[in-house]
Length: 116
Image 1: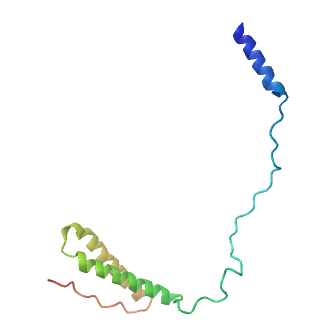
Image 2: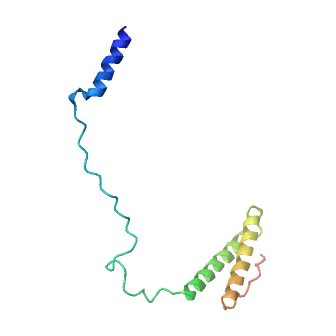
Image 3: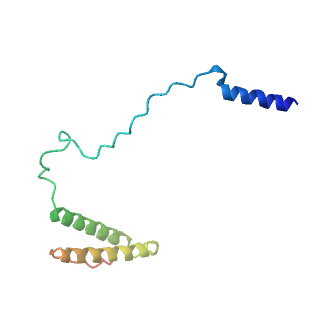
């Protein structure tokens, strides 16, 4: 009997709300779109002239990457723990050379690994 009475009281309180008002909420507003374009004030009118543009930038990045792989091979060649990484670096150098030829630039000459 006590459980039934408690359920009835609880149900009555939930339905009537005990006179309490729900908290006021601000009116719903439509979400604002995220800014996707920069304003003219934050974007320079012309790109800096010191940075290479287009194919020159790609060429510079490829030559830089090739030099990094060659430096790694020079340090790691002959060490068994780096054998797989050295082989991967050699493959990447070949890929870079193919890309350079495809772009119309001669590939830098391949230097044979130095033997101590």
